[in-house]
Amino acid sequence: MNQSSFSRRPHIGEKVRVSFEFFPPKTDEMEARLWETVRRLDQLRPEFVSVTYGAGGSTRERTARTVRRILTDSRLTPAAHLTCVDAVRGEIDEVIAEFARMGVRRFVALRGDPAEGVGVRYRPPEGGYANAAELVAALGRAGTFDISVAAYPEKHPESPDFATDIDMLKRKVDGGATRAITQFFFDNDLFERYVERVRRAGIYVPIVPGILPVHNFWQVAGFSARCGTHIPAWLAERFAGLQADPQTHALVAAAVAAEQVLDLVERGVSDFHFYTMNRADLAFAICHMIGIRAPVPAASESASAAAA
Ligand code: FAD
Image (cartoon, rainbow, N blue to C red; front, side, top):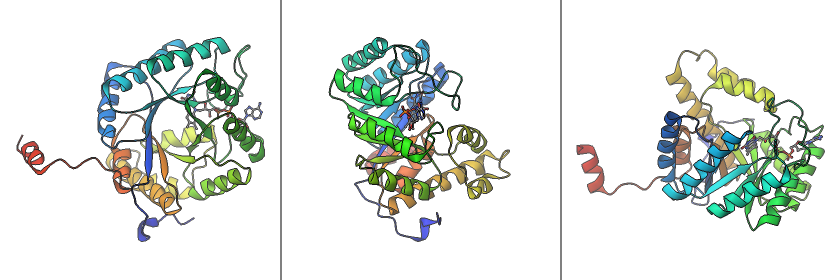
């Protein structure tokens, strides 16, 4: 496909909406960096921000802590991710109730991956929810929530074919999910074809592209191989030789992500979910390019900031 959309005029407008994804920090240093990121991205007034959820009690507690702090220390609306991994139904229902008591009204409902990691076949725990569709149903029984689920433009690695994959998406939407956020991808043609397939299957909720700004191409390439995302040759070529040149890598990453998002805007996409990796810069710059901007400080404020 032709990704060079800079020569075309993107329909940049106010109707573009964004959400940002964070992961719960493990150390004080990571926590400080996350909060710098949250404060910066807060200025862009995203529709919501989401916090990922991992296996194991301590990771889950970190998710809850991060969501609670977003509720108390920012203007942002948090969405808590939830997975079915390694917990019986009653435990998950209690986690949902706890989030609801905290004031959480949005969830991203996921099955999760086995403890051994992405790519290993998932076996549901005995007495647990078997898949994300069952988790969506549990959320529906627990209250009235805005529920997002995952979607896979290149199909989930465990799905034998697109029909099986989209059938699972349909079960999640029929159960009450109101939005699907995609796995990251780099080929917009694949995304467009996927959305067409989804619509043909009678699924009409927004399919929001998950955009991964490439902070480290080689890490992303390794992860892509495990989660079934195709790395186009042109993308590998752009980062080739930049292992020891982080500055140029960052500039190329910004250009690649901006190009992808502008092309999607051109194709009519109006909602974007950014996998921020808890870093603000690339997401902030791309949002600027699609017209989502921080308020410009009044002239007197900017003059005193410059003088300080
Ligand atoms: P499901 O919708 O239940 O299933 C996914 C696909 O697997 C289906 O399309 C289905 O066709 C196929 N499948 C499932 N079971 C079978 C089977 N028995 N036979 C054949 N096919 C089968 N992971 C985390 O741990 N924490 C997170 O916070 C997190 N956040 C995410 C956010 C987004 C936006 C996305 C896209 C992914 C996220 N993930 C997260 C990763 C996710 O947990 C994995 O991709 C997981 O492998 C599948 O989860 P799911 O909710 O899509 O599962």
